[in-house]
Image (cartoon, rainbow, N blue to C red; front, side, top):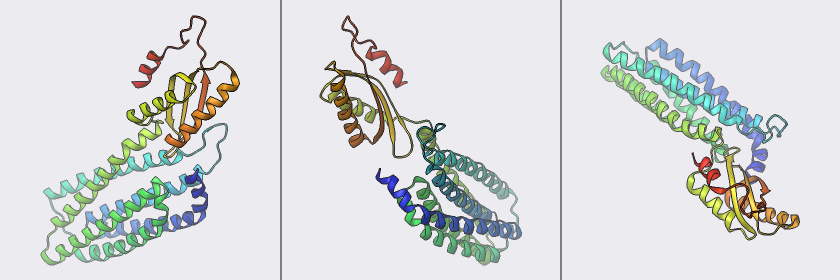
Length: 309
C-alpha cells in the first residue's frame, strides 16, 4: 500500500519535472542530430539516440504514471498498472533497432572513413553533457519509486558519460585528425544502448506475462499455506504479477473443519500470511471438500505438474 500512497503524493511534482526533462531532451536530440549530420559525426548521432531514448523512457514513465492512476474498471479489473510495462517494451524494441542501425553504419565507415569536423562535435557534446547532468538531477527524486523513472535516471547518467566520450573523440579529431575516434565512440555508445535494452527485455516480458515469482518462492508460498493451522491440503495454486510490486494468487484449500464459519477464519489467516510475507494483495481461496470416498475431488499431483511447465 505504501508505494501506492507515495505515488499520489509524488504525482504532480514529478509529472511537471518529467515534462520539463522530456522537452529539454527532445530539443537536445534535434540539435545533436543536426550537428551530427553537418559535421559528419556518427558519434553525435549515437549520443542523440541515447538522449532520444531518455526522452522516450521518461515520456513513457509520465504517460504510464497517468494511466496507472486510473482506477480499476470492468475492462481492466486489476487496474492499469501494466501500462508502464507495455510502454517499456515498445521503448526497448525501438532502442534495439536504432542501436543496431548505428552499429552497422559505424562498421561500414571503418572501411571507408568520411571526414569529421571537430569543433561542432565538441561544442554540441558539451551542451549535451550539461543537459544530461541537469536532467539526471531533476528526476533523481522520482527514481526511488518507479522502475521506469529509475531507468530514465540511469539513462541520463550513462548519457552524460556518452557525451564525455564524444567530447574526447572530438578533441582527438581536432588535435590528431583521428577520425576513427568518432567511430569507436559510436560503437561504444550504440553497443551500450543495445546491451541495456536487451537486459531490460526479459524482465519486462516476464512481468507482462504475469510471471509467477521464481520456483524457490513459489515453493515457499505453497509451504507457508500448507503450514497454516486448519489447512489439511492445498492445490491448484496459481500466482501472477499484477505489476512490479503487487501479486495475485488463487488456490483451493482443503480445510480440516467442515463448517463455513471456520473456513472464513481460515481464509482470513491465510490472507494475512500471504500479504505479510509474500506481497500478495489479492487472494482468491475456495474450499475444496473431500468427496464421499474420502479422496480429494481434485488430486494434487496433476495440477501441480501442469503448473510447473
